[in-house]
Image: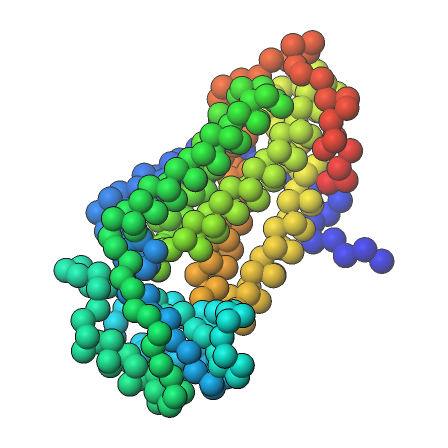
Length: 321
């Protein structure tokens, strides 16, 4: 007995509300960009600078308890991780604490460092600080640019890949849809002022990978149908393709979302925003595959008949959708 969330054969008209869905996506993209410019992202320590403290104790590493103790001081973003150090004395545990700096100064003053030590002593009385270092704003600024460049490089690489594998219209549609996914995800982080750090950048790159995979499968089935139904209008052909791949899209998306919901609930504070970024990006990525990418391809038009690229030896052509 096979469970089906979507009937084996569907006949949804995905173009019925074409201008409403496509127009809403454009409006949300512009709104996300404006929010980013006006409100700005709530950058984490990686992008704003701060203080890094290396500490050690004989007590078991209670990361959650350490974080709760420090957050009572109201110092902003706090990142705590356990450090494996083979040179550490037997029975001692090393932890790394990263505290966000203020707008005026990325370094914490001596009194603040002493307050952090006193707060941690309530959890581990024998804790000692072996080093206190400042993460400068210049390095953080370089990380911001590196993060943006990594996202743009990923998008450009996918543009080249889709262009080489399919028609240029597919490449343009896919990349605009990817920009849609990234902007809407960033817009949510701006709107709710969620912490944005390097783990979220990794989440955005993961969204790009998931989203382009979904679009490649849809595009590949579309190209296969272009050769199979040469007389069918392109709009109807795209509807047929989306219906044929709908089961695969829904099943894949729900499987990913189930794992991410569990990660958001039980993954702790450190992973919650990362999991949420991928969760939201998966939803908008699935949406853009159906209502964004194919609409752009339809607007641009496609060569039909013998001009269409062959797909007989395509690895994706035989996917059971």
